[in-house]
Image (cartoon, rainbow over all chains, first blue to last red; front, top):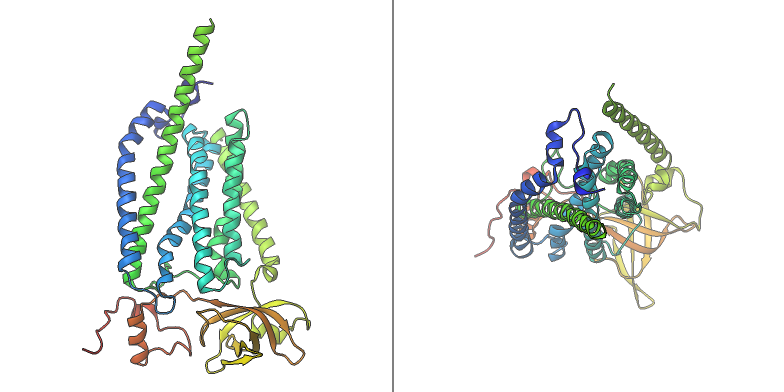
Length: 258
Length: 167
């Protein structure tokens, strides 16, 4: 299968979504967006982390250890948010058979897994001095560990078949089944007794965090999100280019053999 | 129905089925998913003596006694969830965050006399994040006693400008 047939737009509806199935058009559009995504990610993360780590007030009982929050919380939000994006891409792949959706799902996986690993690692570093334990098997920590394994399973599954189409199909089913874990992660701290505390920022009430700590957290979270998007778009571009190069090389090899 | 529509309906139907199955499984397992049991749960259905489990709740105000046991630091305190209370004894170093009015989770066994012998004590932090000067201002003005309970509603303090004291 070469690059042009891999991205052949299907007949029928969904023309708007399928405009970007053309690899040239995707590369041009994403090439224009990527520098802005990367710059916004670096700038906002930089502001958020400098503000949070050096200028925001320390917590009255946790002291300076609370500053792990400015990395841990954005990583945790992105771990779940990235999985939600993975599930949306998988839905688009299963239902509308959009070729970019397969590509997006395959490239979101490793970035999401990295965010989840960062969340688990920083959480562990935070847990030891505050709770007194690196790790406990409460519902929140366990469900996030399951999320990490879902990411790893998806990464392995989409790359496990000789036919990438079959890998994408199997991977999207796994990703959609795993969505059931997202509400469990979110509400685990409300449904069951856990060591992890419930949410600080809710839709219904005022955030139980001082505003001078909330702002750097929001900057950092926004920066992490742009950075996540930039990494995924860059990986997708690299994958498209890799396919093109492979198609060119195999075409040349066939021409030389003939 | 087009093929895309059929696939969408199929995926959604599978999602509903899977969600229902997961909800049923989790509600059936909710006892074992819980990380700890509370003092009132112990009062209504006490675990067998000698069985190791986790007890969780708030450290009751004014109940914490620290002393030395055989040259090792030890502590005795009551853990409450508002309705019930259990006395806990522990030999070892308590976490930094441990204090009266704070949540905690202890692993241990129930002694025949009803006290909980803890082998490990973890501090549970609540969801509030407050700078020291705001906490001091709330304590000074009598709006909050950390040993007695949670802080006042967040909207009353989360945008407070701390007044510089002294000078």
